[in-house]
Length: 280
Image 1 (cartoon, helix red, strand yellow):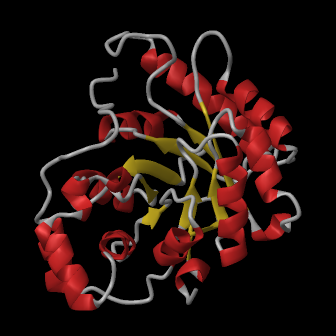
Image 2 (cartoon, one colour; image 1 turned 30 degrees about the vertical axis):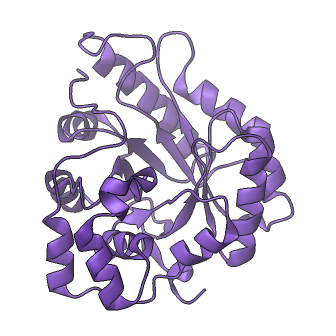
């Protein structure tokens, strides 16, 4: 598989996180553990888990040495159940004593309208619970997902343990340059989810992507993933098939600065996921 799957980045927590991992979002049933088993056999080390699929994930990671595994789980916050309680329940279902990265899945509290004034209050309550798990050694690093710059600024002003990772949708069609600059300035590592836009033709069949792929002798998926990690952004592409996992992990090539600029110029703000910027 080359050096790509061995590459890692140092987090603010002092831990190392693989640059390339396996996403499992929207995989269901036995496809979850099949995908994980396949990826681990190919040399993947980072597994980004899917809420509700803990049993299948547990089967997938069973037998794999825990020190050679980087496990990410996500949790939500709100009035009814604390983020820490939900995270502990997930760890129990996975039968692990700690996770490598615990992510607050959204800036929005569960069951509330976007403009509700309590989002910030509940978000900080949730984060304080995550900080407690970090101090207890149950979450080695903490992260957030889909936080805007404003959300990150308010969190950094009030937290004791800053986020090490920000998960966000970043592709050549949604370059998110201001967020990249902010995270770099605050030592927050970016990890791109849906880095292939869920296979959308707007990205993978774009004439410029196809042209560059032909020029470098790689697939459109490889070109898009390389564009991402060449900026120092980690990726967690989802894939069930071993041949796609092998392709996604084989990124031992370089794009020229001109090719990088050409891909970045495709930015239109096109997104697969949701926009969290309207959350208070």
